[in-house]
Length: 271
Image (cartoon, rainbow, N blue to C red; front, side, top):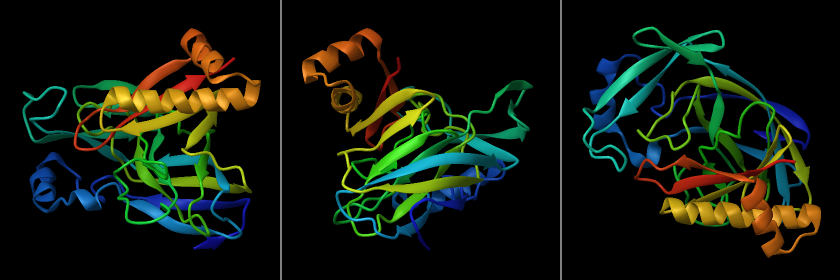
């Protein structure tokens, strides 16, 4: 679709399995046809009139409405706990703002957007692979109320969003959060000539920089460098001064370290 800057859009999203898993018994059939290039589907592309390379999109997450249930999956041989049983899936029910795990365990839903981004400058980037364009950021800061800033690399930006989680722990250690179908409402604004090199976020008074790399420590370094740059802009600090400020007041979290994809990290600062 094509929109003008400042318009609101509602995107219907499928879970990471494209809605194939409705009960644990559905997992083997899904894994038999699973293509790593066709996971984490995203709604789009959305062409934003007037967007040009060097601009930045500011995307406000206004609403996330969850389906009635989602799933968590585990696979043996992963990098965190390779000796777990599996492959296996557990269905998680949604009861209002509460999630229900088998055995009666309940906890508050924490909806967040896993995949959000724009088209790369050239070539092909699959939605599951994070990078300067965004894609699979798996960052818990990207929730309702967040404003996500994305660099524009091609005319129209070609924005897309998907891979919603009803809840995801930092690290996403088994390879999934609570993967779920959803409906997401966003407002897409355009900031001419203001692009940063990577996606970043403002939410609840915090500035959040994102990073991705093959290893977790590399992803953390990318996120911290990005946050140092953002703080330098805002508070007129040198790179070293901003780095020390992050160490004194900032927080670093791991978005995903589940293997098979680049690790992601995010560095957060709030005063």
